[in-house]
Image (cartoon, rainbow, N blue to C red; front, side, top):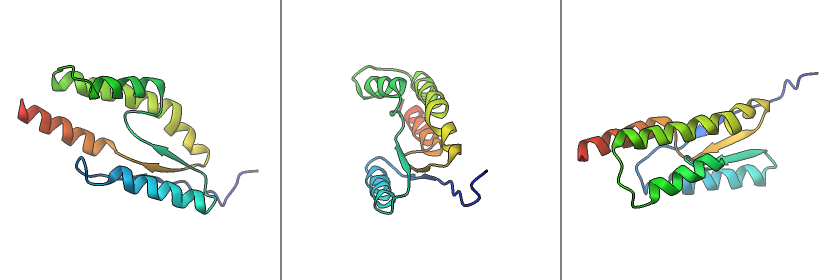
Length: 114
């Protein structure tokens, strides 16, 4: 029998680097835990093995063009969707640090700087 009381939420915090997205998403995740609400705290890139590798590369001093960086983020996002986000349909809450909208804006601003 299907649970009709199931509530699924995908919550994304958007903003510039240093604006508090991580702080806010962690606070929300802790709040969910305090209320015994099942949740997953997702950050991007990260969580998956591939996402963690991409995070290492992006944070390293390697010089790369904006398109290469965008492809790395896209690969990490694809893995994240497959391994984490799709299973959320089974009924887990999410506090999500950064979503695609801010990723695209970041890549655009990188292109303008170059």
